[in-house]
Length: 48
Image (cartoon, rainbow, N blue to C red; front, side, top):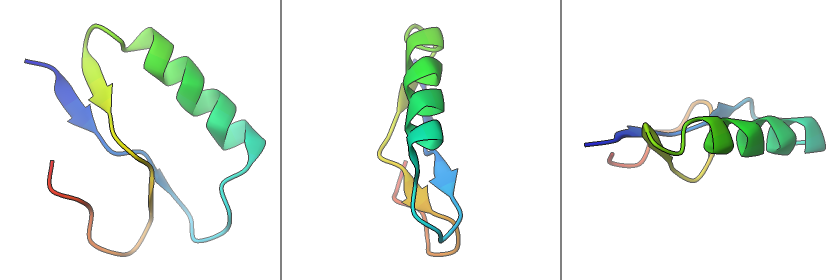
C-alpha cells in the first residue's frame, strides 16, 4: 500500500518553484506514494 500525500502551500499563490518541486517529488516517490492535489494551508484537508 502506498502512502497518500497532500502537498500544502501557504495562502499565497502557488508558483513555478512549487510546481517544479512537486514534479520532482512525484518522480522520486512514484513507487512509495500517491501525491494528491495540492491544498492551501488552513482549510480542512481532503479525506485521504
